Image (cartoon, rainbow, N blue to C red; front, side, top):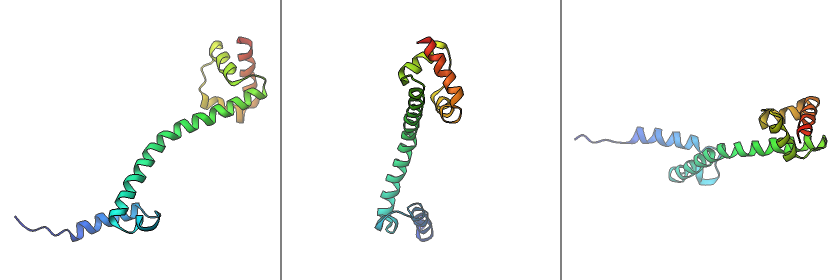
Length: 117
């Protein structure tokens, strides 16, 4: 069996690893072993927070819908119940966008929800 020297291969791997941890603090972007730990942790946080962002966005939409529906004289829960009862199938993302960009159209939805409730 021939001898394998890792110089070039290891160097490239380390270079790629250190490039991924560029911007990390202290030895976490300088030393290969520490950088590897830092990279694994950073990638796991990135993965988890991509999923967490979905909940954050939903909370934002609900806050916007709640503010707009209260401005039109209806609580969020009453508004959503009235919308479901009236058969309007609009998701929260669209409702929040409508509340911000088209207040008149949103007011019509609130009126429809009030009529059902």
